[in-house]
Image 1 (cartoon, helix red, strand yellow):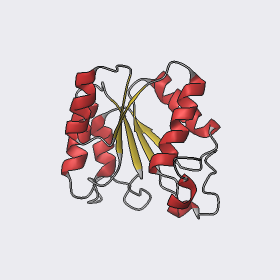
Image 2 (image 1 turned 90 degrees about the vertical axis):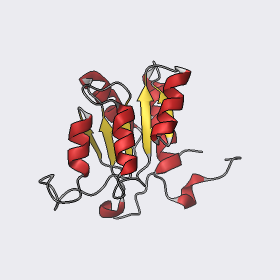
Image 3 (image 1 turned 30 degrees about the horizontal axis):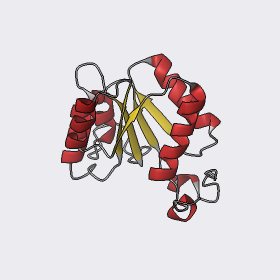
Image 4 (image 1 turned 120 degrees about the horizontal axis):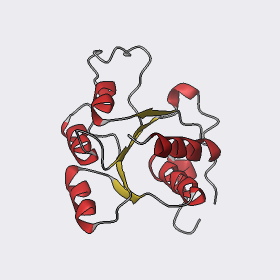
Length: 159
């Protein structure tokens, strides 16, 4: 079963995706995977945890209070400069204003300790970055289906 985009929803109700990725080439690939998947969700990319936290401030100090809505999903690289993806997720999950946003830690490593630490920090999911673009595109479709698609389009285990 393919995930159909939420085309019947007004754009103001389609949840956005915040990607935290410091490597420009990886960020471009992730953006392209979402675009080529035909998903309607707006995607914003920031290069570090500080930028992500700044965007998530709900007190208007992010300078974008009128135009920015809280994302429906945060996809963060594990290894970020200055503040790791683990620390970012821990801070997001400790804030009552952001704790309910699903957070996915994305890593090139499948190290068991990294996975355990991700879940301890509050990650909703830990994903290993695939080597091929087709796999990345499929992974982004799965992420959308699991965390962002309307419940009526998710289907069951046999779909």
